[in-house]
Length: 239
Image (cartoon, rainbow, N blue to C red; front, side, top):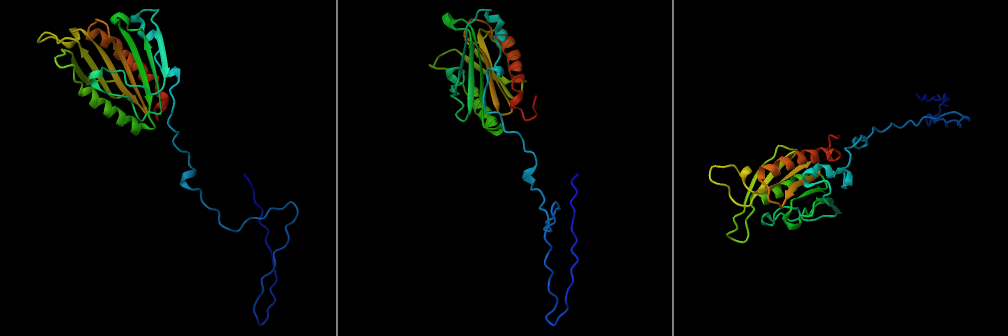
């Protein structure tokens, strides 16, 4: 604790017809401390610790590792790119790219050659959580409005809630409608998910191939959960 010594000045006042003149303050003694008599201003509210700024980049460490796609084979090629790109959803969904993103990274595992299946993981970072919520709302509308092209294409798109992270969405792409009364899980097709954590939006999807929707879902949903867990640095609550 710092102790401040206050020097008391005792002055004499000479009474005259004009009144009492103020005494001049004495010179400061060497080594002494003089306290400013003016009141000390209280710290402004802005001086209190503020909420940390949202993370604004996408390092490789927040992307799913190659082991997340073991079903594609141990030697599946892995291609990684940084920069804001279009969301890897079916063209019929017209989702475009996250125009307000400040950073984005895309990783593809597998080549997709000869209609072989390949996995995709994308993470887009928005300026703040509100902007990420808006982007998820835009994606939800796009995935709910997928329109097969050209007309007569038998492909069916089914959007459904996803119990992963915030605003989770799953999208099944069914190449051919299943027989009446059967589940889409038994139909040939693929599956992808989109979810949000803080100011980051993540897409995990299995594309191409001739597998069944249910099998694709069994790969993608756990991948979406693992991807969400990697995004804790974008969450205001932290890791």
